[in-house]
Length: 320
Image (cartoon, rainbow, N blue to C red; front, side, top):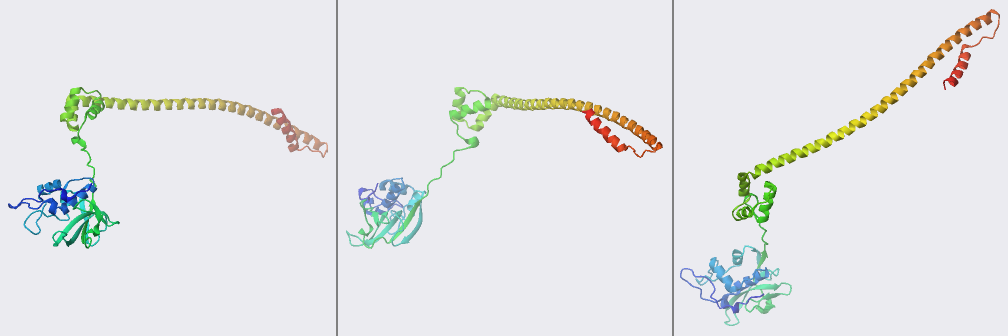
C-alpha cells in the first residue's frame, strides 16, 4: 500500500496561539506521507489525514519558517510511534531501503527552490515511493537525487508477561482446578462465577480458609504423607525379615556342617590315639627283641624307624 499526498485536501498542522493551519496535505504533506508509507512497510498502515490528526492531538507539529505549526522533523514519527527509531542520518545517497530521503531542487511549477521527502523503495535499484503520487520511480526523477537521509529501524515490542502471583487473573478452569487441588472438592457454579468476577488467587485463598477447605485439605495431605511413610517403612521391615530368614537358613546349614566336621575330627582323633598306643607297644617289643638279640651276639638289630614305617603304611590302609 502506497499513499499519495495529492489524494488528501485536509489542512495540515495544528492551531497555536490563534494561528490556524493554512496549507493542505496535498500541497505540503510529502514528509508525513513518507511517514505513512514507512508505517505501512512496518505493518501499521495509517493514512496521511489520520496521521495529521494524531500529530496535532499529540502536539508534535513544529514551526520552522512561517509561524504556522505544520512542519515535522526526522524524529517526529518516533514520537508518534515508539516502535520506530532513527538509527542514523547523513548526506548524499541513503545506505538502505528503510530510509526517507530529502530532495532539494527548483520546483517544476514555480521554479523556486523547494524540498521534497520520499521513502526509499529499493536502495539497490535506486528507486523511491514518490510521496506526490504514490508511484515507484527512480530517485533521479528529482534533479540532483537525494541530498539528505534518515534511516529508520523497527523495535519489535516485547511480549508482556501476564500478571502472576496474587494479582493473576483467574478464569473458570483455573478456579475449578484450585478447588479440586486445595479443597479436594468440586466448586459450585456460584463459587466459580464469584471468584472469576471479583477474585484473584489471594481472595480465593481467603475463601478456602474461611470455608475450612484449606484446613481439611492440609489435614488430608498430612494423613496421605504419613500413610506413604508407613507404607515405605512396612516395605523396609518386610525386606529385613526376608534377610533374617535367609541368614537363619544359612546359619542352620553351617551348624549342621560344623557338627559333621566335629564328629569326623573326633573319630580321627580316636584312631590316632589308638595308633600311638600301637606304636608305643611296638617300640617296647622292638627294644626287648633287640636286647635279646644282643645277648645272643646277633648283629641284626631292627630299626625302630623301619618298624614304625611298616606300621604306618599298614595303618593308612586300615584307616581308609
